[in-house]
Length: 188
Image: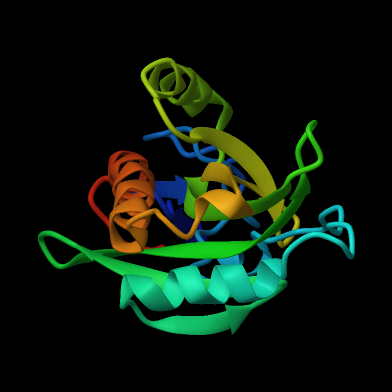
């Protein structure tokens, strides 16, 4: 009787159907497959800003329009894609992220890096120790845990910022981890 093999979504190693984890990289086998559209859930529930706060949606749209990149509605915000070198690109989801401790309305930037695997958490923590802006985190998207890059900025800081530079920095950070985790594949 022939055995059924499943190819790992990350490293493409062959695994038996009964295996719970990939023999090559440790990624859970089965339901966990890279989902290029998982980012559509990246802008999860948030605490709505006070009515007296500036129009967060308009500020986000204006900021993204200034970047010159493609723009599409996604969940509670917008999706833009940043072109990176070597024919790679990275999607970034931008939307309201509630308020900070000082009561300022926040804009959240989220970019998906890949399925979360416990053994890669050490890599994530080491990378976070070197971050100046933003951080790597884990978010549940479509019922599965994913590594994401997250940055929150007060809405009043958006107007003077170079939108294209901010988005490129976020995309480069997220794509760097995606490249490492997926062994060169460009999924998100």
